[in-house]
Image 1 (tube, rainbow, N blue to C red):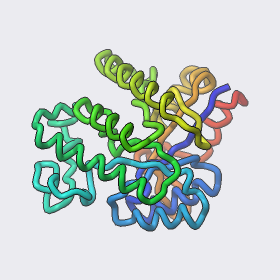
Image 2 (image 1 turned 180 degrees about the vertical axis):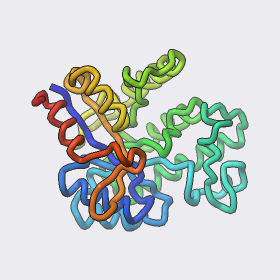
Image 3 (image 1 turned 90 degrees about the vertical axis):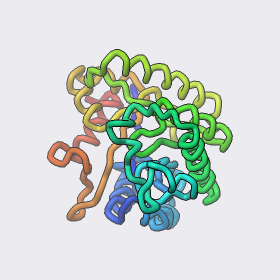
Image 4 (image 1 turned 30 degrees about the horizontal axis):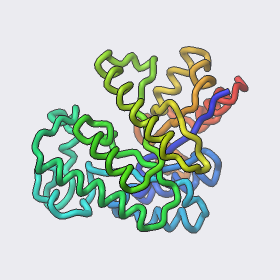
Length: 263
């Protein structure tokens, strides 16, 4: 029998996303979420979690892509425009994360550390982290994030996704396998207990759906998995922002049954 954690990204990015995560957790559709601490609806997200007693289900979603940084030096780099992150770190030129400029790396390290410390200062009990658009697994950022997570007392970090049905290229498999070994070691060494177990697989919704259908549920039954998606509330219903016509809450329930070996 497997174990499946349904995870929601981007808590705090908008009112509609906050509503979807709140509803999803209350309805048992979403197990946990991670918070972007520098967005216009961050305070609302924390208030919702506090008022609805799910603060222990909220980790940190490091954000170096959009919104206003919480440190100053980084605002004067190519990572920002008019005082806001401009998304350049996720653009094609830097998609592999090879940043050689030491000043840029120092600015990024300062911002990453500051976001972690801000999150902790709010007495958030779940010291789990991941990142917006998977920035934490980029080669130049990965060692910075790992070091800062250790120094700030985080207990777990999201794994990189390696799902067979995605047919990843061999260099990607090698790199992700390498960093996942590092992350698993970190998680095992630093985990002090929460309502969520340590997982050995991380993946997106569509990838897990595809894999589960392909192998008739064997993969999901044999692993402890964190599956992430990006919810929003539209006409009172939870939708996935990145697979509009292919997402259905019934599929979430089906995945849970498959994980539990119920067919």
